[in-house]
Length: 213
Length: 209
Image (cartoon, each protein chain N blue to C red):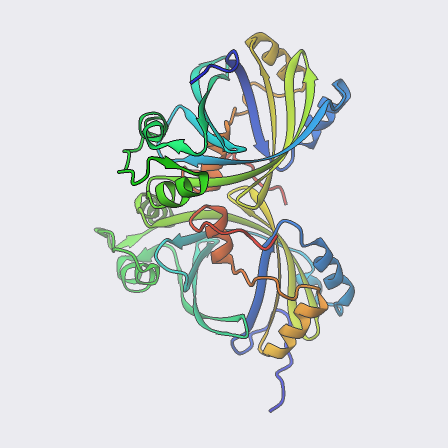
């Protein structure tokens, strides 16, 4: 079976991912810049502001909202410490109560709040989240720098979680062995795989655990 | 409980782009001292006038006495050193947090026991682990601090001006070019914002990409 050649910014089959968060990933980031092949200019530097909805009751669905659009990914499997996530739903605000109850709150795995309107704007949805004891809306601002190392899509990012800065680094590919080799090339062997959901929960105190460094 | 110092007026800001103010501080004062320390803050989503923290195994509580001219006057008092009597936790700490006290199964608690068995199981309480590098300066006769802090691993800067004399703090603010409309943000409020225990205002540390 031949490997699928990954291209940055293009759709591929579901990828495996290694990501970690810490406060000092500069050495790995430096190695990433030096080991990378040239990448398309559109991924050199990207910025975004997103709202993540984290749920105290689950770590398997990752919900984020950017520019009024919701995107939920669900955890599929872990292979050799690498995680595979697949899209679960995509939606746009205003969103119907039916979609919120059947696809969104079910993904949060929390008690369903009363939804007495036919559809909800983003502001109305966030107001529901604000008063729900099991859910938290978190502002996440990102400055991302794209690279390609060992045929894996890589990124170094500065991430502000409710205004506080952490660094993040990742490698993703359809090929597990390529990511494992990339982790070693970047000097990140043995470093914990920490996804966005975990990092946000740790910084916001929902999980009492440290980041990678 | 022993009153440790005369209550000071305080003006504090948090952000990731405080270098202009830091440069002005450094132009007005030599760096007098640098200290590294870890603190554990206890927080609730409720509005409280208390700042409850543990540093080097000692718990202290600062009570917000008053707000004056955009400054906050905090009155600190020592609660005690761990291991801490359950009775003190019940009669001093929980009332300060504004949370109903649980039933205690021990007579004394080490810090680890207190966090694991009392704090983390209470849905109304949250813990912030805060690591600080604090640089001390003097501006307009005020204790002035520039600190890099990590909140549960995430970085942010803070600058603080404090003095027993409110007028001196206002003078220092003026010297540093801090407008009167800049929000005074206490440690508990900043930590609660980072941890999502309270809403983020529009003005909170927007990242200028």
